[in-house]
Length: 137
Image 1 (cartoon, rainbow, N blue to C red):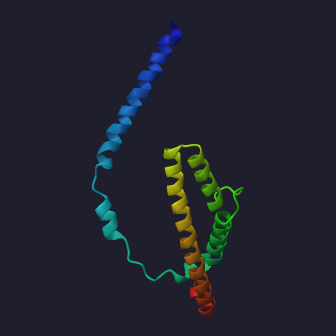
Image 2 (cartoon, rainbow, N blue to C red):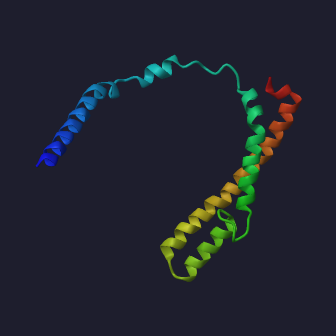
Image 3 (cartoon, helix red, strand yellow):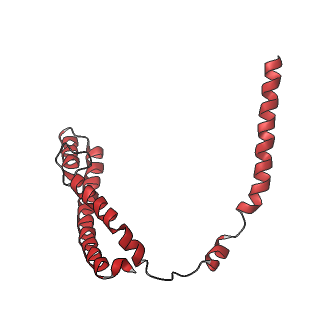
């Protein structure tokens, strides 16, 4: 009996605390503060070239790793070839819904390869620009 009474008190205390939190925070949650924050934001002072130059090598490594993974064979998780194999297997087994999903994922992945190849070329241009402009300073 004593444990049941103690649990009831804990539940009541938790409910009271939740009500108090909601009462205090609810008015501020509905306050229209987003336009005020946007109105006080400063416009960018520069194009951020220094930061782009600073992160260029990391971005290039990231893109290279992603392209290597996508270009991997059927045993490489995340590769186009593996997704193609999975889609082919689903078609062979007659799982049309799964095959359709995997075909759409395959199309996206192939498009991602094109996008990353373009980004790789862009990053090489950025690296050349950064080296000729003292790191974007």
